[in-house]
Length: 418
Image 1 (cartoon, rainbow, N blue to C red):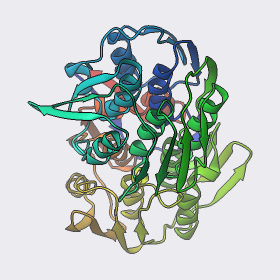
Image 2: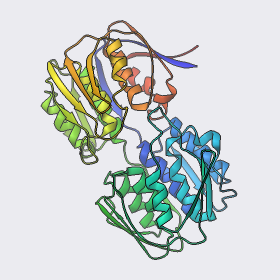
Image 3: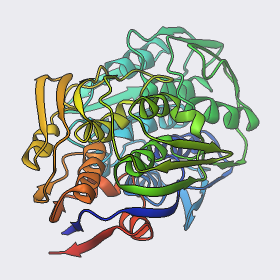
Image 4: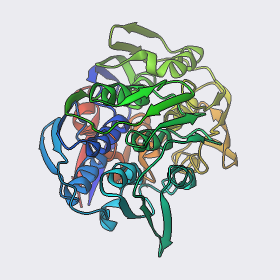
C-alpha cells in the first residue's frame, strides 16, 4: 500500500495550477449517458474518483477513450442496467448514474452508494424525486431498483438543499415528458456549468444556479465538447496552504469568485491576498487571527473547505468557533490533529472550539476521508519532524498527483510503498 512521508517546516514558494473540478467532472461523465452521440470532456482531473466512474460506465457497455486529461464517451448502446457492486461501493457519487441509466434503459439497479467514511449519506431525496417522476422503487438486500416506462414532469421541493440531488434529478428530467420544476435547488457553480452544456446539446433547462430550476423534456441530446471548470475546493485548499506555509504562492487557472466566502475569512484572519484574472496570490501569514466559521451551502463557506480552515485556526492567536452545519461527522478528524499537538474541543458532531496557536508535531496517522486527508497532509507540512500518512487512496480520490505538485513548491513529501 502507498503512503506519504512528509518532513515538515519548509517554506513553500512558487506556482501551482488548479485542475478540473472533481464534482463537475463526475456529473459530466454521468450526463454523457443521456446522449447516443460522442461527448468529449476536457480538463478532466486524473484522480481516483474519475477512474472509478469511467470504469462504471465502461462496465455498462459504453465506449470510453481516455487520454491524459481528456475523455471521449459514446453511449450509443447501454448494454445493461445494473451498476457494478464492486465499483459503486467505492464511489459515493455513483448515485448520479441512476437517472441517466433509468431514462436510457427504463430501469436501473445499484447498491447503496459507497465512498469515504462520511460518504454514506441519505438518498431518500433522490428516491422520492424519482418516484414523483413516475419511477417504481424496489429494495432488496441493500440494493434498490428503479423502473419506469415513461417519466413525467413534476414539481419537486427539496426539504434540504442537496447538490448531487439537484444535479441528478435535473439530468433525469431532461427526458421527462412535460415540465419539471426543482425548488430549493442547490446553486453551486458546477450546476449552471452542467446545465449550459446540456442546453448546447439540445436540453431545455432554465434557472440553473438559482433556487428554482425548470426543465422541459426533450426527445434527444446531441454530441458536444465540454471543458471542466477549475476545482474551487482545490483552489481554496491551496489558498490555505499558502497562508500556512507559503512565502508567496501563485495559484493559477482558478476562479477566485467561486471561493469568495473563504477569501473573506482569510482576510479576516490577516492573510494577504491578491486577485488577478484566473489567478490568486497568497502570502504566508506571520500572525493569524482567530476567526469564527459556519459552513453554508453555496455561495456560503463550503463544507469541503472547513477541515483545512480548522487546521489554519490551530495556528491562529485566540479561540475560534467552528460550526459545520452540513454533515455529521465532518469534525471527527480533529482527534487526529489533537494527536499531533492541536488543542481542539469537539463540542458535538457539528461544532468545535479551536484554541491556538499550537505547535504541531509529525507522527504516523491515516486519512479517514478525502477532505480530512488533505488537511492532515497540510498539517504534516507545518508539523515538526516526520509525518507518515496512510490510506492515501482517500486523498488520491480528489487531488491529482498532489505530492509531485507540492514538491515543485519546495515541499519535502514522498509517495512510498510498504
